[in-house]
Length: 314
Image 1 (cartoon, rainbow, N blue to C red):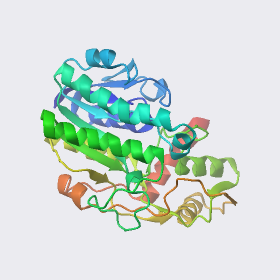
Image 2 (cartoon, rainbow, N blue to C red):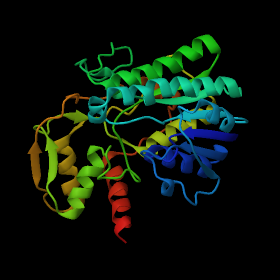
Image 3 (cartoon, rainbow, N blue to C red):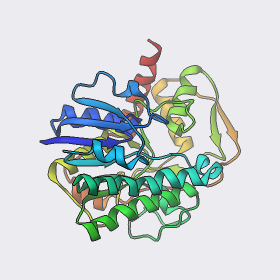
């Protein structure tokens, strides 16, 4: 068991799910959720035993260095998400994602912490058409967000080479699950669809709906990160954190219709600039790190997500 883990962005939906998992599985005795609450929510970690929320910004290197004192490892999830938001304000995405990452790494150096698990993104593959996405493919980012996440993983991997850090830079693929809110400035497609479906509203589909994604349940992400931390696993190359599934948005709606037991109205709107057409992970590297882990399948993950949305109405 690790004594103390700090999760940057720990009040976000992935961070909060991970914090709960780390404590519940005994991977960590205590977890600090470090978050500026710009996209995270204090309620996500409220009343979680063994989890403390510290409000702070990763760009505040001095404060973060103080918080990291006595920490065994950092899970760096804090970022300014969203491709559309990065197109609206590229500098904000760069400041938070690229500069923010090196601030985290420098705070770690100052605090004497050298173990990190960091979140990159499948968006770094961008315009590269090859499927599945193998980590050795040439990155071809098509949005400022994707560029900033490529910088994130590059900084983490370079600190392994020159400063003796250890850990993993994971490329996340369309993570979904409980605590991921709809109606949020950074809302992703699954919560947007589920929220609209439960409200009896049309589901807004950008473009023809044929674009494909490797949807990954947040519980699977938490389990992988927890396992890597517990084992002390490390990789000097980026690792996809997804398991090779591929569903179109229209197929996603089909699954929701099957689970909910009724048809859903679709409202096709304009495609979004910067969106990648197809995405699917090659899972060989992640399987080498967690060979025995069985990811949660799409339908099970959707059922848990729907149940969480319904709990908000209770």
